[in-house]
Length: 108
Image (cartoon, rainbow, N blue to C red; front, side):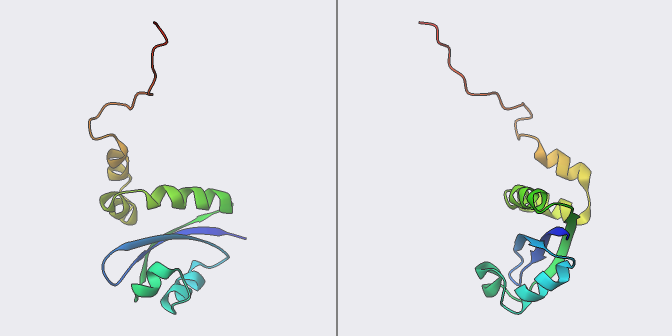
């Protein structure tokens, strides 16, 4: 059985990211459209599928769903358009510097 991560564009222009286990992601989109999806999409119908990706394992799909949910709108739109260069660029820290671990010296 396949697993899916999908993104819906809601009536207010916002994006909803979800995951689904099954052979066809359209089944889940239909549930959202019928008001049988999550509470958020219930209030934001109609919805339209703007992006989806199939995964072999549901655990991988859920991990990617959680990651995408934390992305900015610009990064989600780059994913929708398949612009991996922009997705990568938006993944960098704004300062351009790598994040250093928070560590304290034990010297007294």
